[in-house]
Each structure stands twice: as structure tokens, then as C-alpha cells.
Length: 423
Image (cartoon, rainbow, N blue to C red; front, side, top):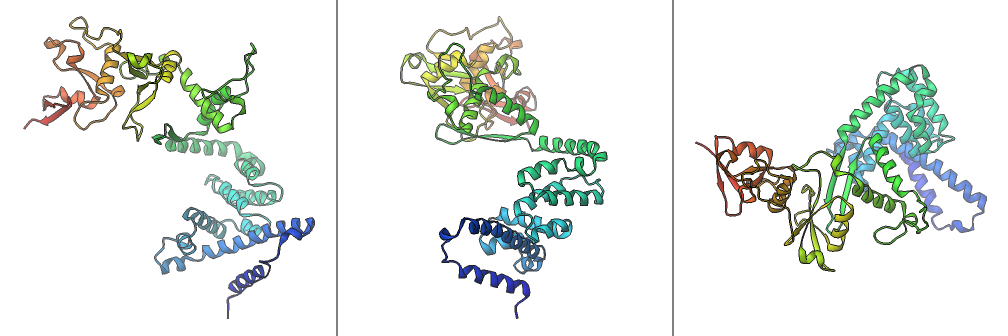
């Protein structure tokens, strides 16, 4: 004899199979509308039953040594682990904490998306909030589910204490926000990875306030701007009208503009100079219509083993408008050899060392040249010259080691420096 739950499930599947060949095209408009809303309610009820089963299925997981019932379900039904883990967490929350929400889902009064939003809002309340206030918040949000979708419920959930317990809302919200801000700064990430098709994928997590600030800056570029002189719409470098592009593309173009208008003089000194990028090309490349140039800057971009190359036309444009320093090889240049006239390497010399060495020249070290320091091979105090031939880039760590009497150094044919610990 089947368990009543299993009997209902089998019966529902059989009932649905019986209408598998029915074409809904010929249903009346009213019947279609009724069927759609009833199916969503039925889906909510089936979801609640699934979650109720999941919450009690630890023995099923133990049968195959699965971590939990969510992992077992993902494997058994070939589902996404992320989905079944989320379902298992919600199942436990409904089973142990939120019976009112579980009942609403069981009766088809809320759907899965609403239930997830409500559970997250309740879980996000600080621990010091009394249980009776949490219960009031649950009751209020479940009632609001009859009027609002997941997005609106999420907004209500963020300010639910203002509605059910205004006397503690401000102090509690301040504590919650402080905790969120601290967690947001711990989670802050930004990564750059070369894709290999001329683009770099930028991925990041930012605190909300910083993201709002960035979005505000970008929207200053994406807003449709009227040209007071009537010269036509704002165009991208590809010649597309900015205001006609999809919004993500417009934001990308805005980010490019933002980078180009940043004043390097207001950034921290980087690599012994104002924060700049170097564009290197030969004089012939500079004059040619079809040629390439190399952009030298940060080297902490995974996949950037071959450097960053642009067309000579783009290099000429950047050199004019984007605060990049052109380093033309074979043309007139700044004086790079200072002899005994100056002890410290100049900014121009440091840029030349960055171009030549690219990174710290200690063997096996790849700290970028913009983070490195210029070292005199023969000490200036011992008569060494402040010239490029007597200079080499070393990161801070290896610059300290090269002056450490506990080490000797060997200059390899490649120009790298090998360190040996004195015995």
C-alpha cells in the first residue's frame, strides 16, 4: 500500500499525463487565464511538498553518504547543485522556523520566488530581534505576498521593522547596516582576465555605496547629451550613436571615457612617477598608417603574457587625449643618462627602466616594474653613475635583500639577478 503522499504524487502525474495530448490553443481566454493561475498555485503546493520531504530526507542522503538531501537530490535527478542546495536551505528554514510561510506555500498563497525572498528577509534580521517581532514580520510579509511580487517583497523585507516594530527599527537597522558594510568590504573583489580576442573580462564585487558612486559617474556619460553647437549625436569610437546602443554597451563605453578623463596627477605616485601608462613604438610605426604599438602598465592581468598591443592610430589618439606617455624609439628623447650630476633616477629614466626590464629582475620574481624601485648596480656612494647601464629594477623585497650582507648576488646572462645565502 502506498503512503498517502506518494499516492497523491503518482495520481497527479497520471492526471497530467491524461491531458498531455490536449491542445490548449482551443481553450477560451477565460479558461486559459484560470488554468495559468491555478497551475502556479498547484506548482507552489507541489514545491512545498518537495521542500517538506527534503527537510526530512537526511536518511536518504545517509544511504549514499551524500552531504545532505540537497546534494543527493541533485545527483539523483541530474539537477543543478546550486538549485537543490537553495531548496534544501529553504526546506530547513520552513520546517524549523517559518511555519506561517510554509502554510502559505502549502495553500498556494505564495510561490517559490516569494517564499525565498521572505525567508531571506527574515533570516537577515539581527539575532537580538525578539522572536515575537520576527513572527510579526513573517505574518506581515506573508500577507503582503497577496499584493506584491518578489522584488517589491524584497524592498519591504529590508524595512520590515519600520512596519512591525518602529520603536527598535532605527537602532536595529543601524547595526544591520554596519554589519553589512563590514561584510561588503571583506567581500570586495575585482579581477581582470584577458579573453584572447582583444577584450578583457572585468568581474567584481563592490560595496553598494561604491557601486552607486560608480554608476552615477558612468551615467554622466550615458545620459543623452545635447550638443549646444548642433554638431550631432555623441558617437562611440566605432562610430555608433551612443544614445541608440543597448544600455550595457553604453555603460561599457562610459567606463572607457571615465578612465580616459582620470587625472593621473591626482593619483598616488606609482613606480616613482605620476601614475601613467607608456606607449612604445618605433618612429616608423608612429608614422605608418597600419602599425602596432605596445601599452605598458600593470602586469597583473592573468592571460597577459604577451602584453597589450593596440594599433598605431589608437596609440596616437591615446597619447593626445588620455594622459599616456609616448615612448618613441629612434626619435628625439629626454636625457636618460645623468652621470654623477644626480643621485636618484629621474622619472624619465624610471620609465625607460620599466620599458627595458618590465618587472623585478630578481630571478623568478614577477612583481611589475611599476611597483619596483631603481637600484644602482655600483652604489652612487662608491662612484656609481645614475645611468641606465648602472640601473636595474627590483621590488621592495629584493631591493632590501640586495643590500643585505647575508646575501651575495650573481648577474645572469639574461640580466636577471640570482641571490645566494652566505654560508
